[in-house]
Length: 311
Length: 245
Image 1 (tube, each protein chain N blue to C red):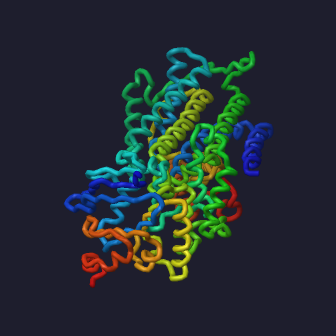
Image 2 (cartoon, one colour; image 1 turned 135 degrees about the vertical axis):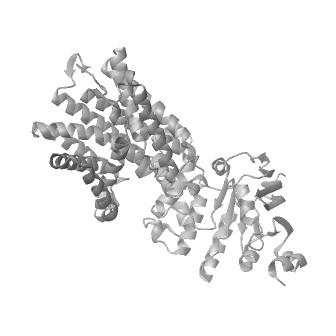
Image 3 (cartoon, rainbow over the protein chains, first blue to last red; image 1 turned 90 degrees about the vertical axis):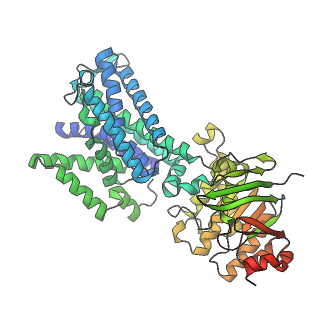
């Protein structure tokens, strides 16, 4: 039944493209890619209980791994995507190893510092990366079964975003329901107890950081391909805070929370930024309201009140 | 015959304090051993060295003849050394069932294939057996935080049982329990002792006399006496250090 619900949500997203007006069609494509990012983040925060402030580094590793290889080496879209994912995997595994002995606030600070170093490196090497100006990729297209699909085409963009999001959501779903998911939750609740139940806790932490970073890199790489842009903004602290915000608002430790959180927050920012340039204040206020009155987030609140079976 | 567990001149120093100094402890397979001593005698530190929660400053731990001194806690659990906490340490947000399932699945995760398709029925059987033994099966769907204190202690024991211990270390299991619950606990420990060796830290002398075949007394990081419960009761040094007579 729970799998059915999640497949139903994916089917709904698939069906919406037929009825949405162009503006919202484009918004939703972007939201799905960012929700995949949030889902990766949530795997670490919501299940393993580790709060990172450095996930932009994984997102940007996917982005640069894909963007730079396409721009400079002229590789195809699929190869570029895979290289982005490999880059993200490598960065995530390295960060996982470095942070193995940290927990709580120390983990947060170390990930933030590493991500800042990564961000500054993208600026320092601006002759290659384009710094905060970034660079644009043009004429990207996907060769699928003998057909040439331009990624700039809205329908192609929407469906690629849907596939990426679906893959991340289902991976998330599968991990959470697997024996490993129960161990991750156990890490969040009581690490020492878990060690004395016979689990090699550092190994599971490394697993959690690596998979979470990998999903973030998949989202970063897809973002670059679909929106044809690479720039260091996406490596900045704001893009480490966003997934935290989306996950908290939607409900950390719920599978659908990241999608709901990203959806609500993206529209909120869109409305707010049409009214004022200080739209970040809306973002901050939402975070405060969430933490004070809905600490479990939207989906978390629904689960606590009406649907305890939600994963 | 090799002992199930032996510590050889094991010591643990915290800064200037030698919490355990040069302890030689030997447990035979199948016995129930009580470890007693005044507060701060080093009992919990000693069992932490055995379970691998702490690593010793010097000395060795042998389990079934094998040197396990350098093994981490999780690998020792794999060999059958299982520890239950003095302060109840359960997953409060999990259901009773999930607490035990986390322990039970440990033995079933051997190959990569188990991670992809865990034998959930086998885990369920183990969980049912462990919860039935401690009498908590009816409460399996309750969140662990909703359990009464005595039941939380029993859940802790059920988690240990699901790991199929060779050596079960119980750290003050009767602490905070009512008299009737203590009777139930004693019966439970006797049941467990049919399949496992038990090392129990205990302050309640009635429980010690009831359960233990032999008693080891610690004071100031050292073993000061060892013998049957009757011998220990009569031991002059023990009376001075521990019973205050």
